[in-house]
Length: 329
Ligand code: ASP
Image 1 (cartoon, rainbow, N blue to C red):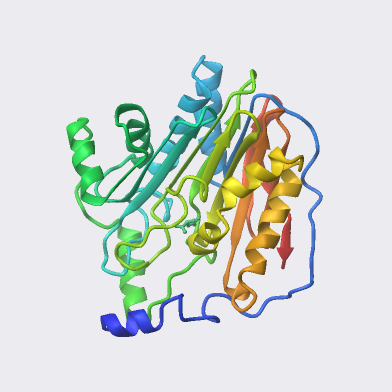
Image 2: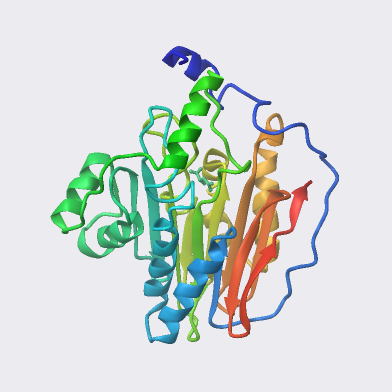
């Protein structure tokens, strides 16, 4: 097993060519999947598992739940899904073999809550909501977040890797280098943004973060403004992919502010990706990030740094999985 120093030396912060092969910069391709229609209610969720999350969230809305209830209940489905390797306690661990979770939730009136670096909690999104509703704070981390969960009667789960996570962790240790991975087969934070029929917005985001990250690493997902931002006056946006790159541009807040200045959700997502790329001239080949956004009228948009990002969209006509447009193939 590599020692700590080797890990750090080879960390993503030093590396520029580890994760993905050289890609085709300039080969910009757009898929014609985004339509300009306005839908209310509308739910958007990241990746394939967004379909099941949307299904649940839609049923909450149909049963008179609020948009906040819908985005919380929706992503709880993914948190409990043992097949998902980057959300919830079944996810891949950090490099010490420990699963730590990040989550955030936000309402269009500015209320928000988040938790980071949390262990043993099956539903960090619900813990984030409790931080929002039951404390004077926005964010709790680590042991403090776990203690708060206990005080709220949330059960602690046994700290044991899922079979698949353990197998992959053991393989990773064999590789003897510190190489956190995004967008190969083990990305997939679930993030959801939604608008109800009256134009109220909410969003949620929950993840086990980057696989084999440094112990203590926190990504964009629980950072309000980076992984998630919601404002009833404008719209909502959320992010998935390389958290460090998303934090650098405060991606979700940026998209909401661009929409405030008159951009459509699609234009705003594209501009956020352009901004992210501009900050990563030397290592963009290693980075994937994707954004989804909705405005209060029910228009939506999505854009990714590169091919491979998809999202689920649920409106009155049904629930569909859409390949996002992207900059590089
Ligand atoms: N954004 C997440 C993080 O950096 C990972 C992901 O979306 O897959 O922790």
